[in-house]
Image (cartoon, rainbow, N blue to C red; front, side, top):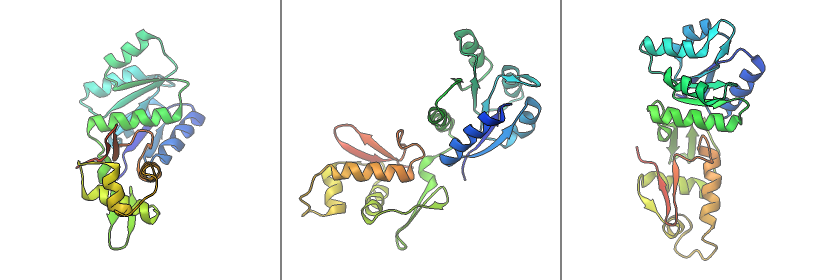
Length: 220
């Protein structure tokens, strides 16, 4: 099941932009336009994206009250207040991260992903299922089409979790020992595979690069 992100933001247009990017990354999302709604929905969320200037309160105060009530739900403050004192105030009230408006939506999604990983609320490798007999792959419950080589590459990775695999090993296993083409074809296929199975291809958590040595599939 995808993590659910509660967007606490009084500006509908910005909330929609955030939601679109979260949806593209495979997250579920809900919207709270004010502090009162955020309190009601916070217990159903895996992470809060919390604006500070809300129509019925202050996001810092809401963050502190949630922490005082015992909530351990990760909170990422998203605000136009960007000076150092405000950032310090955000962390002091219990926020896990602080993002200043305007922001790059992809960076925001990456920060959400990072906070969820640190908190243990998502395990990326569990969101990927491979049907060997049917040669089908499911990412967060959705079937994703792979080319034959992409499928074999992913299958080999998943059969060797946590193990360092060199390009030569992958070439022999997937392309065959008689392959005489460019070894960099492995890199090309890994890149394409990441684009299909990783939440954030630029920050891969499943198929990890071991610089100068090869690749490793996240064990778990």
